[in-house]
Length: 339
Figure 1 (tube, one colour):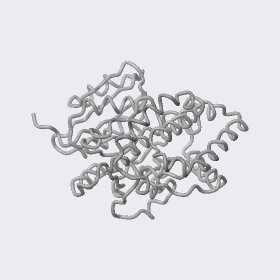
Figure 2 (figure 1 turned 45 degrees about the vertical axis):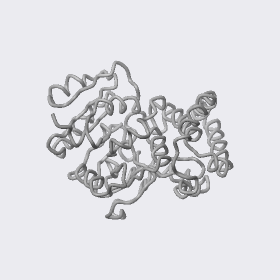
Figure 3 (figure 1 turned 90 degrees about the vertical axis):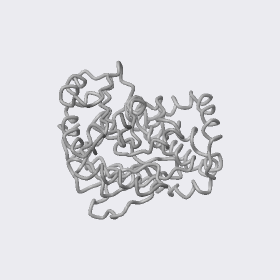
């Protein structure tokens, strides 16, 4: 049997409220011979039985427990056999032509290791939720173009630091070179860690503005939930220790420390100890993280100066807070039914 050109991988955890719509829009876009891999992350909503009945040609992987987005994606990637590997959230709904545009971007540009699409807010498809990953000098990895009007996007593909795991197409060679997602991250920033490892090895990424999907933002854990805040704090420090080259880490240490001190103070003042607990969990792992760092940095082929050009200046804290409140306001518009 010939190897399929494309493998589409979707991970679901109790996501049956969104998965049927996701697959109904994705399936017609898959090219002939494409492979569909559905990973159930230990759900209790009957997803595996439904998927085998509704999509008998799909490969359904039923994990015995929830391994998080990172673990679920890795299970799907290991099972997939395509030359190109598509990741799509189960609560993301691909617009017509999305898959074809991503494939075309990689097939026409051999210098790209990954191509990402634009995720739009499902209830506000005129606004961007994420177009990939941008990185700042204070160590933050954020959603590129978040809240930007769709009408203002460029037409042509644009180079970006890395692709978002919610809508991304990878070359198999990239993942064979840098490895899969770090399973210990569970959820959040696993794609930023992967993007850093790809950059360290010289792989390029681009966002394809014409490849779009509507996304139910933070549908799984909930925006601002303690669970999400803890993992974001922990995984932020994990990524910094694992992936930042020493010259960049030292040059930006004041900005990094300032951000984390302010975040910890905000967490204590707002009675959200998860913000502090996540960071403390990462600090307790420091010996193991340093071991991982040595292995990752030893394989780097890109100098700090090249990587530094991707680090954007950190805005004043009040501007960052205003940006977050803008996202919160957009999410309040959809009401509780979508989460």
